[in-house]
Length: 453
Ligand SMILES: [Zn+2]
Image (tube, rainbow, N blue to C red; front, side, top):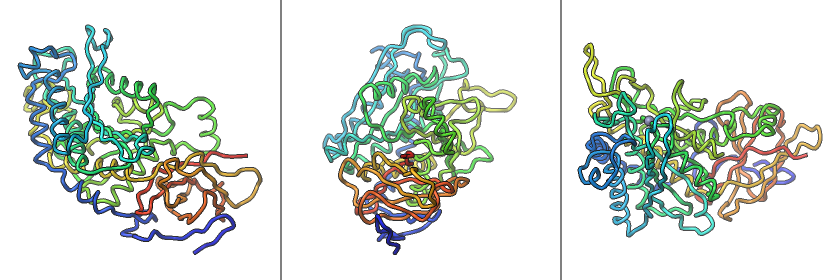
């Protein structure tokens, strides 16, 4: 044990169950049991059901007749809503099922005014203060074929993105059996293929209504396409480096202090990596330090633009002959995003990783506020101070640090008491962060300190 002027530090947590990247991990057996319920069979049923609507193009029918016919995005939307309602019935009405919609005017890929409907279910937090904290999982339920405007031919979208929709649904199904201090939103959005319309509307609405979204997990193309070269043990997690929402002053600070790899989205990605080391999900998160793949975008970007932490989950290797393609065979190649190419067990494992992340974040105390590092004088020690987690649920705080050249946290020290600590480590040589933990070892997202003169 190391005793310093302003805080007592110990090296390990009480219930250490494993240690990777220098950090002890703590398993919550209730979370482990819940995520184990995620099943390939449910995923298969849901993806096949979504494909059965023929097309889920946002430009396809959503009037009463189309819904009754069971073809088009309107019918898909109503089915998702009924599925959330069904899970809610199973947990005594624990989910609030909602539709957030607006009319998108004509645009490059929208010919006429079109309703964009986001369906979501809220598992409200049990602690009145913590319930204001929201973590969210999303996938887009719309699909397309080779021609954006073709709503006549099928657009099965089994991988892109019935798989992500199935992750939101499966997270809702397994986590609605539990209670968490903070709030989880299970979201499915439309209009992604026309320009991220559904997620943009939702993120803007959340910002306007000052929702405290701590994390958004976007699952898009997590089907584990079964063609050669796939690695079904890995899921990629993309995160922005320089925040899209940063202003000039923030960019100057990032440049000055070497903060290029410490956006709140990057910290969320590292959190997912830690969850992956902690829980047996059957899939390993592979962090990719960029916003998204070349030439592609996704719904996490909508949340990033509003200043929220958001990451994208995508299978290890994509097969581009099976995305955004009208079903056909050409030169012996089968085009089309069909369920037979999807690895349902893989999707259920990705859902496990998402559910473990959501459950860990909502079980944890709020992150510490106003985290600072003292930079008044030229000294080689580092003093960090912060305000207690506002929900009053933090039992302890932990300091994390790593070399400036390291991708992930390498060291941690627990602060036994107080909200200030001095470490015999030069702030010039490392990157620090502070996180909160409750008595059972649930950890908050880490917060990188602001310099204080
Ligand atoms: Zn997609």
